[in-house]
Image (tube, rainbow, N blue to C red; front, side):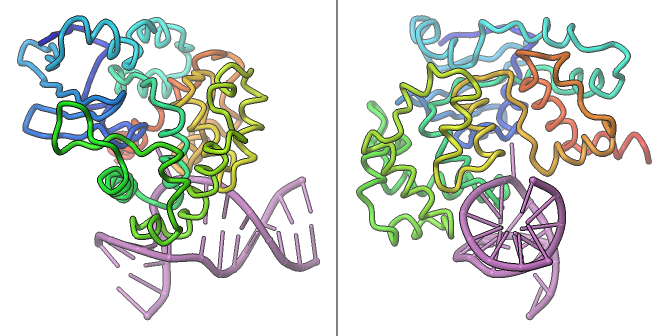
Length: 274
DNA sequence: GACCAGGTGTCCG
DNA sequence: CGGACACCTGGT
């Protein structure tokens, strides 16, 4: 067991933030995450802390980095323009969200599958892929890891489409084959500058601007990226008709995007106005 | 049954 | 080069 106390760590908000699809509520106060070839349970304590069912060594070696504990999110919020009341409110509301360091491959496929799907549907098809094609997680009978590129690359399209991927099945298959063949080397992409990484991702079928941005932010931890989906688009037209001041927030735009996204999805803005 | 959901590729003008 | 439009599938 490891317990952390950090005002800037809210497992509920992270789970609801829509950045990852394998962190889910498993009990009244517990959440379960499958990632890093492991399963982690987290329990919210009355004390305000979060207790994990892992050793201190496992926390230090794996999860501390996965949850991006080295980034100072309070400092990012402190950098927000105090004149920007909307962003200030969104950030206060979303405090506790962190950008996870997800596996680039898993993020790439997950966001390819996300297009024109709602979050429950995305979670369902990711879960089905894992159950059918993923390797068991060591030490756990039930849990499956996210299937590797080689595994997906070897599947017939029918097998993929059996997981409710719809027209995205052929995209996922093509991406898997690019990665499995080495045509798309995610380890090499990881060291590319932002622009080059973005261009490389756009070459994958089914990856457009939005999916590339999400893959960069959530899979490659490029905190400067600012994915614009329909929710963010709504915020931008309503609150930032003159444009969002991206240049002011170099290196942290992605974090602010998460705050805006979470705030918009919560419906807080509408409530305040009615 | 029409319509939409955290888009993308394609085809028009 | 911007703007329609189709696309799988599950839910309202």
